[in-house]
Image (cartoon, rainbow, N blue to C red; front, side):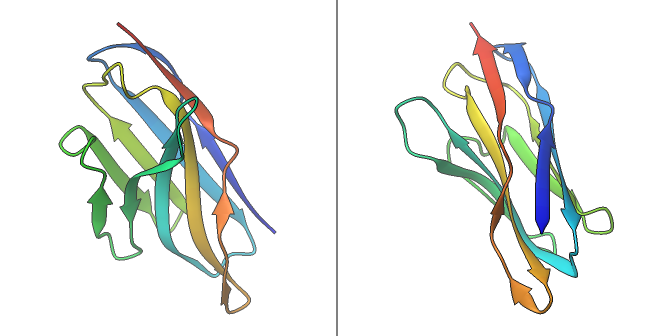
Length: 119
């Protein structure tokens, strides 16, 4: 069993910054890609940023230049630094990962953390 636990959400003024963290635990051999997704009320869940085990990153166009994803493979953690937050950024942010357990790759989600931006 693998668990992903997010932290760092909260309320911030527009233009401010927040840093989200996600820690994976369990019988993990390694973790392939790790991602952050978000879901705003009434909208579909969307990919925000992704990072491979080698450190290659990809971002949604809406966050490029403002958000930075990073990971620590030794600690099985992934962070999302969010700068210049905008009124359209509020959502529940979810950590997602592809851990390898007993030779098989799985897909796991965290429970989500709320990000609220005040104008």
